[in-house]
Length: 114
Image 1 (spheres, rainbow, N blue to C red):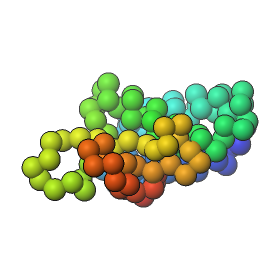
Image 2 (tube, rainbow, N blue to C red):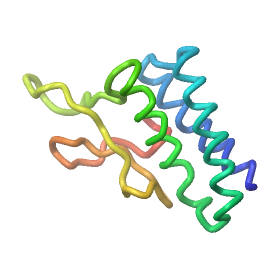
Image 3 (tube, rainbow, N blue to C red):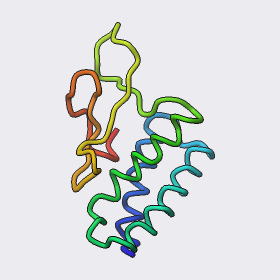
């Protein structure tokens, strides 16, 4: 397993959680669970390590949707746009994942830079 890349992915997602005020115990627990599961995934498919950061972000996004709601919300569209989320692109999560506005399709920020 590539522990360094997993820890870097964890740090990037944690930075985005913190940037949006969601670095709470439940969110960090969801992040830890995602890192653990993706660690197993990388063990099974070592070539997939380049995708792991975006996939961890998507895993956390899915987990938070069920407990907290949408994350991260878009803040770049002008009001009165309806509340909407950002999503990771490319869909598989890598190799250079970015947050994309689901309404405009614009790149908002690289993963870890919200």
